[in-house]
Image (tube, rainbow, N blue to C red; front, side, top):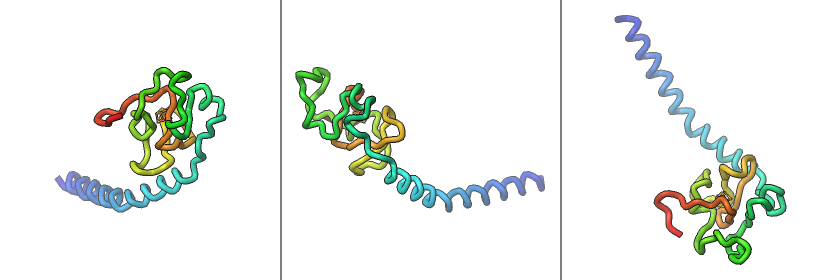
Length: 114
Ligand code: SF4
């Protein structure tokens, strides 16, 4: 009985410490995201994937899979903070992509519209 009380106390204490640290971790992640380099359109993987930092530059004749209205901000692969101009993408690890960009891997995010 006494051990289970201690265990509960320890769990509660650890949970409170964790909650207190959460905003600090968020700040660290945001500042780290700001330091992540932007994906260059000339990067070999970007070229292979047809990435452009502005979906308005996509030439539909060269990229027939492009759908008007498609861009990184409504792509399933985009992560990071909603509203940020440059955000991480699951495809281009270690780089950030422009929310207005596009590439061949684009997939509509559930609930989003083109
Ligand atoms: S996978 Fe999606 S978010 Fe990533 S660059 Fe391509 S279109 Fe943008």
